[in-house]
Amino acid sequence: MTIEDLIAELQNKLAELRKFARENGRDVSAEIAELEEKVARISWGPRAWEQVKLARHPSRPTTLDYLDLLMDDFYELHGDRLYGDDKAIVGGLAKFEGRTVAVVGHQKGRNPAENHACRYGMAGPAGYRKAARIMGLGDRFGLPIITFIDTPGAYPGIEAEERNIGGAIADSIYNMLRLRTPVVVAVIGEGGSGGALAIGVGDRVLMLENAYYSVISPEGCAAILWGDRGRAPEAAAALRLTAPDLLDLGVIDEVVQEPAGGAHTAPKAAARNLREALLRHLDELRAVVPGELVNQRRRRFRGMGICEGAVETMRLRNGE
Amino acid sequence: MKISWFRRQQYVQVKLDQRGEQGALWVKCAGCGDLVFRERVREKHGVCPRCGAYFFLTAQERISLLVDEDSFVDVSRPIVAADPLGFTDCRPYLERLKEAQDRTGLPNETVVGRARMGNTPVVLAVTDFRFIGGSMGSVMGEQLSCAMDIAAQELSPFVLVSSTGGARMQEGIFSLMQMVKTAAARRDLERACVPFVSVMTYPTTGGVFASIASLGDVAIAEKGALIGFAGRRVIEQTTGERLPSDFQTEAFAFDHGIVDRVVERTKLREELIRVLSFFPVGRSP
Ligand SMILES: [Zn+2]
Image 1 (cartoon, rainbow over the protein chains, first blue to last red):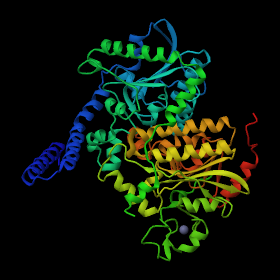
Image 2: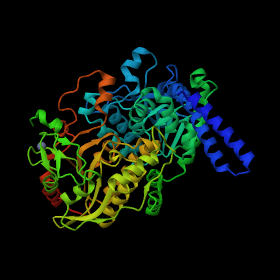
Image 3: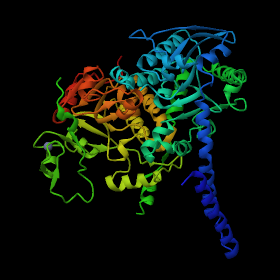
Image 4: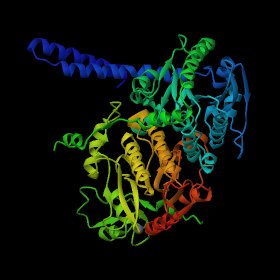
């Protein structure tokens, strides 16, 4: 059954229910509300999937595009000082509105050759270690840190595992929880799982309108839970990975508007909106004393998660 | 360390505690194929008496393997998983949860408590793989964070024994955020100068491996463990690479410097007592 069929079927049920209520004078508003919510959720599917496709659009602006558009100067730094230089993560020092900042971001590449060299922004351990190094540099000199997230996920490969990609991600998260300077994160395209989060521990997390941020790719989720990668659009909707969803869930702070049709249709307009938001948040954070900033950041993430409060809930659920 | 063909089958997924199997006297070991006496397997902490293959341990069995007799006091928070996204795939998440609760008799996948090991007070956290793959959602994040808070407050070493596939997809972005939440709690543990020993068993993968499990002061792999970030299938599909036969085994993790030591299950308790004996506990530095 396609999503359209399912929606049509639910609409029919809704109509029947309304008719039944009219004819029998019964109050079925709760049932109607539930069905309506279900219809809304399912019809959100295709839209969520559209957004995922926009987030992956081949001509969508990359981190380096935004650095070109936002920064007066960008001095790129290379290498993790341990093993190599991962092109899937770029970073360095930049001048933003007259101030020096440290910047780090995933880089997908702007043409097929670059895509290949950057592995579409799928960073390995060297990339995350470079990121931690540059953020540490920013911290030492009291520079605000801006990160740009745009990755399908960390690179899944033998060498990445041999060099402990899991440990590199954990260390990068842990590192960001000690930085004493303001950290603003912008999800500009794909926010794919741990590989995205590794540079996503910020005092503020912004998301471009058509970006997504998720614990797992819709395809991966569909493959595991539905047993069919083709169900990715449904998984995309169920995961609630769009920018408005995440704002609603309280995980991000702001949705940055994109020009109609997506950031790739007018990169300068997208960059203008992003610049305004970054400036505003950095200004707010500059007012907080450094030690307090670290505490606030830790508290922010300590507070994330939703559980049922008491064992009673479980007993009720189990019908005891 | 030599890799034998037989390691692949070292872990045998026999659910010792499942209802309906309760009465069965014999279980089949996938390591040697023999029928072995269930009670003997239990007595030997899930080690096959014939071939030495490891069966899955429940959280309770894991705890009794490790702690001084009768020393464990459960301090789990009275919370259970919510369904923050209203998640439904082929089945509603709430239904999967209830099924897991009924089948395991546990309210959630994480058990935390105060205990003693060789008379040293510790805070111990154990995840149970039977409960939705021991995956980390908001509940595990909260239980582990609270356990670390207690350890920091009481200056008791923190021991985490992981058996988990990674993030709980059904909780979406909230499950991802638990990676940061647990890391934030670990920062407080560091501030209190309390040692943290991370024990990785079969399996310790995905989001848990890429966060709290990798942040121990000492990392110990149980023999037969599976340790890594990305799944085999994803790697094969993305790269087309042929994976080495020992890929993501405990020996692989050891050879690549990912864990400090590899320990047999029956020696794990002695190992923990010994390693903890080296740590000064307290806020001195
Ligand atoms: Zn056997």
